[in-house]
Length: 545
Image (cartoon, rainbow, N blue to C red; front, side):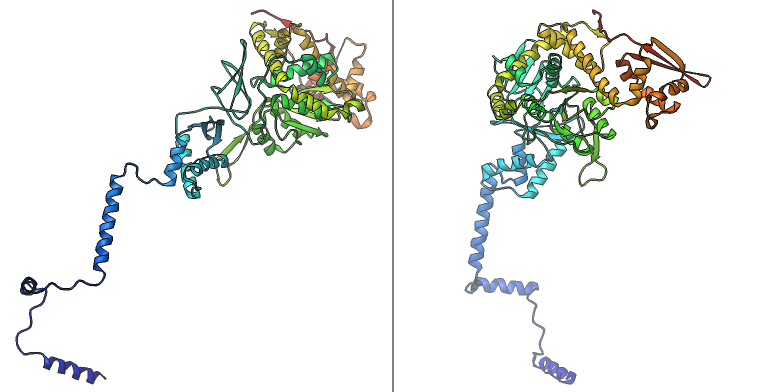
């Protein structure tokens, strides 16, 4: 085969002319020849499709010229979404959480930049203008850009839930479609379109009616079903404190037998301050509890049983201010801070714990058993309350304004009980009602005494100490001697050693003092000495500034 190929190659070379090689078409002579031929000969035929290609190029050139002359260039979906976001205001909270607020025709709307609500709102704006939904990637890119702008911007604002306090007064977010807010000051109250602060609105939140003048205090007090006048004073003081976010209000605990209307009363109070679709709930764990405080201005925990020490401490932290830190989802080191300080409502058949710290932060009001006729009219009761809700709210706003006025006038009070801010606020409320302010302190003292009496009835060691000091002015001795004196008054299971008794006395010192027994413990040369004294009853004193 190779031999045949060589023979064919030799034959082809023999057929070529023996003269000089023809000039290459790429040489200068060849190009000159081609140009001369084109001048003296007919033009060559164009290849098929050349005219179509030329027309396509001309059309593309015209489109390019139109695009250059257009006044508004074509923008991506991400850029359009960012243009919509310019209608709002970006800010970050002190903990660097980014937010955006829109003043829309339906009211002021505030969203966390990372939230699904913010993404849906921007997508809705895009849908209304372009009649189609934006791509998910465009939404993610726009939200990421907004998050960066808010995180590194100069606008830092605190986001509030339902209530806020500024030098101009107290602001109550009505949560209605118009975004209106009630402003309460010492000069009175009014309805305004927007507040100088920003509010967040969780999905479960319901609107409050616009307050109206002409509320009937007697009708409201009758619907609250608290028959004792001193307990009613405390209840009204708690309501006033619940509107003021600067006052750490104690837990409001309703106890009583089945059918005493505990849950119904809790629902009425919530509708008066912070209506919600989630009216009542059970007591959750720590992480969910912090989220509940974050999203509910007045949470209601219904039908509680015995509280563990951890649950009691958790509720105490909710009164004084709870902060819970957890890892942000899909991140390794970024934190989310949840929690707040809220006025809470609890219901239980009996006091759910005897922990002293918990009792100091709780108002325990025992409700009487309602008759069958009243229970049968619960639906009618709710209907009457809703029909008068706006006037009841106006009545509370008027009382709140009077309380703020009297707060500035009241002399500073010494020897206040625990939750001193709440006690001072209650005194101002009583002054605004043209009543003796010290009656509120007397009601607080009685409530504390009732709680401690119930505690001592259940606490055998405390009951033994009260029984031991009956008829004595004072007693002094070593703690071992006191332990031996108390042994006959307690059961074998409740007998405490000297060390256990010392720990008990330190923990229960305030509770025993409320029963009129003062405790003073000293240690000298390793010997512990204790002194018990009968104390005078609680008497508040005042001094003028």
